[in-house]
Image (tube, rainbow, N blue to C red; front, side, top):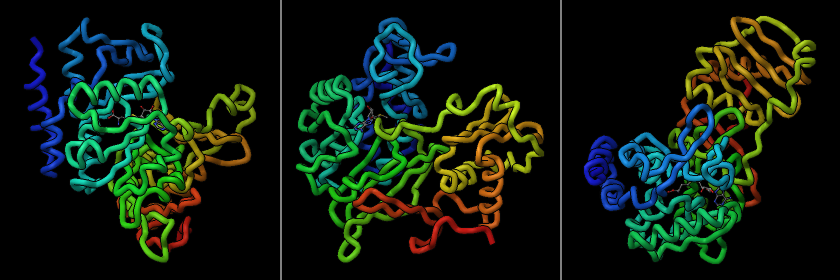
Length: 373
Ligand SMILES: C[S@@+](CC[C@H](N)C(=O)[O-])C[C@H]1O[C@@H](n2cnc3c(N)ncnc32)[C@H](O)[C@@H]1O
């Protein structure tokens, strides 16, 4: 018989949660009640179903592994047993969930809007603190929303409002909210979020660029004359799947071909690969090259934008298209070093109700991008 209670207790111990209400909520909510009996695991490079009934021990260990996010839907609902490529809904890893909740400064009685109901698990944790009737959670996928609603009812959190809606629009009729927490990542903060959170309230959202997928934006909505604006620093590093409307990234297959390889400009790579492996450097470079995708592969590095690509390995670089993406990265890294190797926490974001944002380093009034001295 699988010892779910024992696994739950051990996870709480390992996580060593310092915020008392988050710890109490984590201990109170049975995470296993929110995880479907069939989930998706990577097997041979594709996602394949893992059924609780077939391997209850493995399923339970995954559920209470502090570092494990579990894919609960792939390819926007591809039916099992077909393999899938891209996870499109998941229950986030406990470590990421508790990190975000600790940053949310949620108080009893706060009205909170969650973007991305997923399994409903995080909404239950929010309900433990704010009260179920104060929690609204939006889910773009109708089947996923149904699953969250059912799980919340089953576990005694039926007062949480689960709505099938595009979270980028927020939910105007429930506004103003004291807190808005996104559990899917964005490349820009939707204006509706800034509008629907009260002055002095908080927006907590995983922020990504095409270059780099981590960065937890923690923005306070301004009061008084600066109304219509939310501002704050990045509070940590978390990686979440993108909101449905902001998934697009440049694709290498749209620009790369064997002919393009033949035509590419070959040169000596003047790139500090070691620095690029530093998550703070990668984050900073990503803020400057927000439209450029980058990934390491087989000992080399690839970049691509809408119209260019680059590949670097063993001191040699190939670049193709109007932009020299490896050179741009080298410049961004040189800037980062020149700026004193700032950490992710030194950067911040100002977002406005008209949907624009601006990143800054140290001081919100600083012009961006800062030029190397
Ligand atoms: C990482 S999961 C959320 C985990 C969830 N909070 C939990 O506790 O299980 C991200 C969810 O965001 C949803 N999503 C993506 N884009 C969305 C959008 N525009 N509006 C609402 N939900 C969205 C996905 O369908 C997915 O279920």
